[in-house]
Length: 285
Image (cartoon, rainbow, N blue to C red; front, top):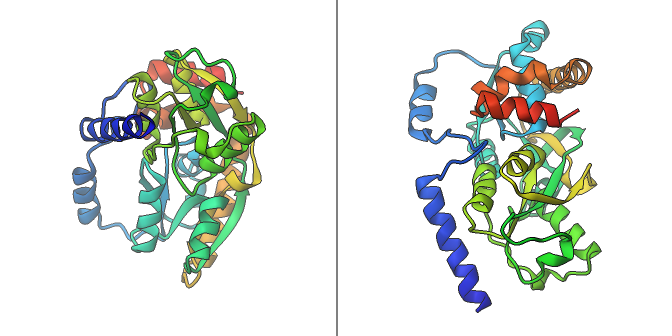
């Protein structure tokens, strides 16, 4: 029974990915072919290409571009938006990106496999364990023998295993379909395809707006913290140092002025509706 249920979840995930069932805050950014065409015709000579996910942790990069911080530091930056960490990593290893945001767990996994990577910054990252409104789970321990969507070898997985262990649940007592796309992971809760999901804070808030329940939210654990990661032999280390400086300046300005200054970024870059964006901003400090 367990195996059959797990297989059915995987099939449902594939069907959802094929059709990308949008709901609530879900991104509609599925035009990869169009993006590739635009990139192929882009003649601007960028100093750095940075691969990011649609998360709160990436906001300072978008804001640094919007506010002209990159210009003030003398670097031109192209932001490459992806919805799955694996795609960010692939862009880095294929030299499509010069830098990507990556958590400590994933960084350590790649290094253990022989990849020569370096990093700058240590960015607090927030994950939430969110249960579907359809299962009436009140505590983490209620997830025993159920399905939790995660991405493997990641800070999301490290956070999830930490919370399960704290609740007295063994890893083998839970099913873990690997869903790399952060928006799809949230959609699968709404579409009744998984019982729970580990989501970045932004996607967790979107899930809450759709009626789902956060069982546990962790401010940060060391294994989940993000970094600006690049290849060890990069010729752009000086520029990456300026990128890190711009990130810190953007982060400070957001903290000082509130998330309202990022409203256009949520709408234009993250593809979240204006109404949902306003609800998100109200829920965050």
